[in-house]
Image (cartoon, rainbow, N blue to C red; front, side, top):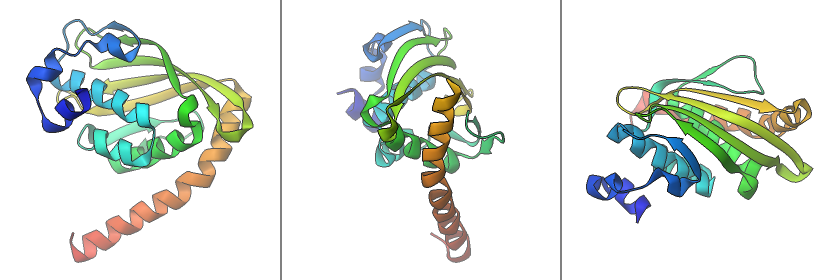
Length: 184
């Protein structure tokens, strides 16, 4: 019901959604409508953690100039397509082990701090962290920082991501180049 309302734009159904249905959520008492919808879309995408669910739920909910700061790489990534590639990849690395614990939202739902834990691939290494997300005035993700520990888990995550992200980024860039040359 929630996913259909989100995808069809049924604002009346979305107004009645209690954010606590997504776990231990604190705050968000006076949510900006688009920010609340992005929070809901985020949880729907994370509940499936597949590249296609990232596209399905988050397309148009990430600012084109979003800045992503991962724990595994010193340089921030910039761009919505880049972030979607990274999120799809990390979803495959974490799989069904990914869960959120405590989640703090600003009253207007434009600032999030989401505590998570997961197991990295087949390594059985547990990682704990916080997603810090800021949304713009349109409710789109504009800044996304991930803090994680312990160091051995961050290294294991980096190893897994290095197998997935570079070839996918290259493919995405190639598609963009072809599209810019020949149109869509």
